[in-house]
Image (cartoon, rainbow, N blue to C red; front, side, top):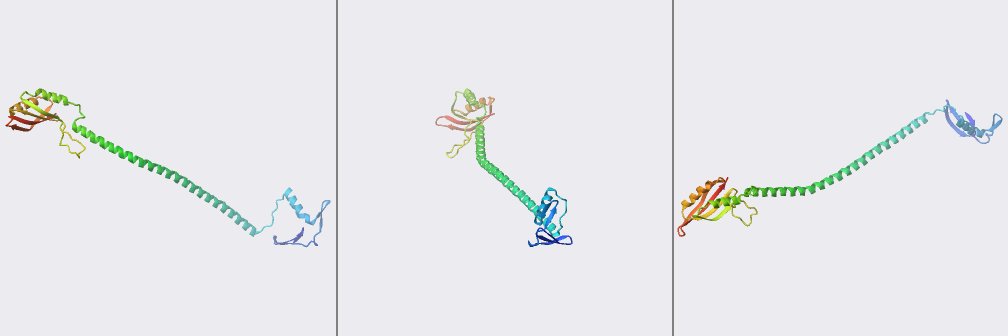
Length: 244
C-alpha cells in the first residue's frame, strides 16, 4: 500500500488494485527537497512537472483489460476508417456511373433525333431516285436521250415520195397506246415511224417501199394496212418503218 498526497493506493502482485482518498487529518506531512520544504499535496504536481521536463523511460503498471480495450478501440477505429473509405469509393463509383449514364443517354437521344430527321431525308432521296429512274426510262423509251434525228428522217422520207403517192400523216416514235385520262405516264415506240397516205394503185406503194428500203438507216418496212376505196379510186395505206 502507498499513501501520498491525500490518496491511498493498493497494489496486489505488482498491479494497481484500488485507490481511495484519505481524510485531511492524516495529511500535512512535509518533505524536504534539498533546502526547500515540500508539502505532501504538492508531491504529485512536482513529480508531474519533473516528468514533463525530464521524462523518464519507465513502464507504468500493466493492466491486461486495459490493453484488450485499447486493442478493441484501435480495431474499431480502423474498421470505421475502412468502412468510410469503402463507402466513399462506392459513392464515387455511383456518381461516375450517373454522370456516364447521363452523358450516354443525352448522346442516344441526340442520335435518335438525328435518325428520325434523316429518315425523312432518306425517304425524300429514294422518292427522287425513283422519279429520276422513271423519267430516264420514259426518255429512253421515247428515244429522246439519243441525238435527235427527227428532221433527218422526215427529210429522207419526203425526198423519196413519188408524185403518185400523197402522204397524209407521218409520226416519228408514235405513242405505244392511246392516252387515257387517268394515266399519268406516256409510252412511246422508239425507233419506229408510222406513215399514212393515199395512192391509186398498190404497185405504186410497193415501188416506193423498195425505194425506201435502200436507205441505210431503215431496218424494215411493214404494210400495216392497205384499203382500196372504189368510190374515190384511191387506196389508203399505213406503213410501219423500223429504224436500225
